[in-house]
Amino acid sequence: MTKVVYVDAEGQEHAIDATVGESVMAAAVKNGVPGIVGECGGNASCATCHVWVREEFASLVGTPGEMEEDLLDLGVSDRRPTSRLSCQIPVTVDLDGLTVDVPPDQP
Image (tube, rainbow, N blue to C red; front, side, top):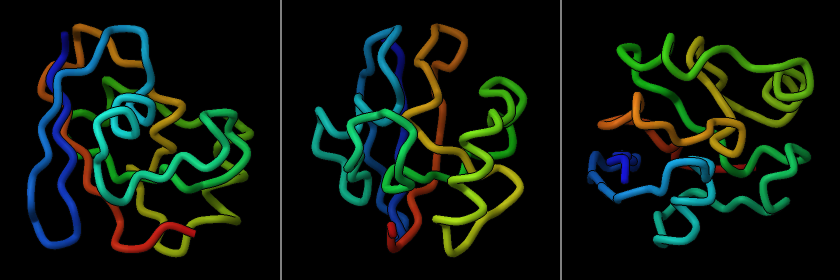
């Protein structure tokens, strides 16, 4: 298990144990993390799982692919340099302690 911490707009932390291989979005939805909707089920066709990856983890999660870039450009109201769709971040042992901020409003 890998610990993932989701921080909501009010600063409340929601720490969960995620299974290696599942997405950061799937772990959030399965555990009822507020603000992560995952409307498309992880198919990278919406932006309802947008998160801001904390800077110290940005290099570990990598950069968005072309399709993800398009969704972030069009579907996210507050895009930041570390914006990612959590459905596109696979949980790995290297991400233990991953902390992401959940925007106050998803599209």
